[in-house]
Image (cartoon, rainbow, N blue to C red; front, side, top):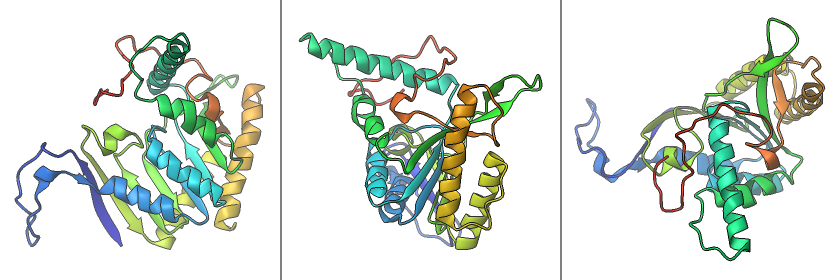
Length: 271
């Protein structure tokens, strides 16, 4: 079964005209079915969660992932590691650090929007060996340096039973703020397993199709962790995936600069 989900902010659209053969829907009230699907999937995960996304920034979904980790669920989360997005993350991190310093000095300053993300969520994720944050890299034609593969996909696979793919990032602006998003979710073991096998083969240069799903995910984690050491030592990687330090995410590598970007505050609704 396949189903379309959307993120639509209330008050943005008003045309109730349905598709041919369908009933009218009051779109003016908005829709948050992508977010709802993610929550249900993470809450019910029993074996593994595999994610590729441009962001790791929704504290509510991270809390559900932490609950899953406590249940023994294996998680691999693939993100960009060197890009303008990471400059945004670093800028937000620096704003949180300054806010903490101000608080220690007794200075009353506005709380950064992502304070909870850096002060709690990332630190909590780093405690679990069954969580692996990963980046992707490729060897340049010169053969002496690895460069970033930018992750712009928005994919999640849970237990080889459910998958979603579309435009929604795992960040509040894709779920509850101003972005309009569209995803398709599929409930089919063969389809989910086939996509996972293809992605793992591409990222690891290793065929894991004969492995049990959990063993395949653990293999991904193991190779990524080993590749991290290789990457730091400038040695050849197996495939493209290497582990990142989630407790230091956004501050581990240099990034492109976006001079116009300003950190968000708790009262701000848009980037």
